[in-house]
Length: 222
Image (cartoon, rainbow, N blue to C red; front, side, top):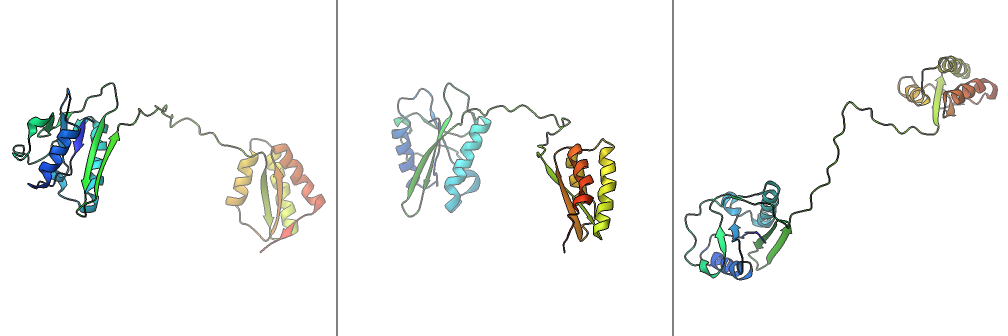
């Protein structure tokens, strides 16, 4: 553990107890001192959010590689035996360098009811670098195997006439079945007499539209 986000209420009773526990637990046999601070110097006591405020602070410190300064610390408390271990107060911002292991921090949150929470968080592994997407590159579209092309009119005869005009346009080439199907239901009025041809290719659509007058399957809807 590199640093501890202390509960740190600033009281003469609570802070010495917490500091002595940290000295005994994390402050022994260290080559680099344990850095100690508290976000309460910035925000005050956020009551039920006090613990999560400390979590957020340490996660952001890991992200930026800097342990923030604890404000309003003129001198270490004389009620703590600071010589009992290697613990240093964050009276200034301190760089949190990369080493051969993940960065780790401990966060304390002690409730007035006697509930004590202490958690250790660890730097996540590096995120996989995803290649940037060229915004000008065409977006691939999954084309269905077959789509319904809807034809409608005010009468059954009108449907057949519309199918004939659409058949001529598709037979002329230069259009896709998907585009025709989309335009048929978004750019034309849905009249009460309707028919649909299911096709996966322009040739299938042309054949189905030609077959429509022969089969005569035109329905009347609402």
